[in-house]
Length: 118
Image (cartoon, helix red, strand yellow):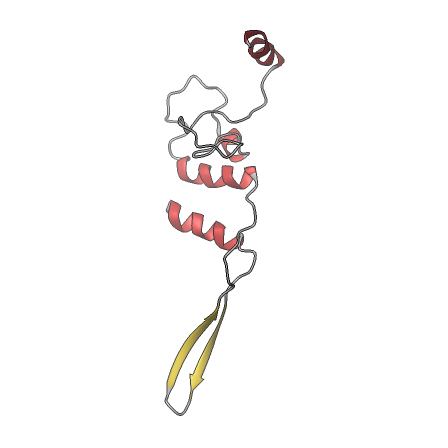
């Protein structure tokens, strides 16, 4: 399945209020109509970090093991659990390097180095 139907399928599951469809049969005219009752606005429930990670992995899974990277955190497990994002960071700001690590379990040594350098 390509990325677009997969994303639309997931979006369909996140609709807060779904359209309702019904068939109208006019026997006198011999016509059939399909009618839809749509909510005034389409609202989606929030995506969890893991759901976004699953969508991302579904679209990049063929490339994960083929991309040469020194980043040892760039794994299927981290992508699926939402550690990588492809457009926006955790504050909602556009990411210029779209495969930067957003969050991951880092060792205490890594955190100490970052704190010491600040």
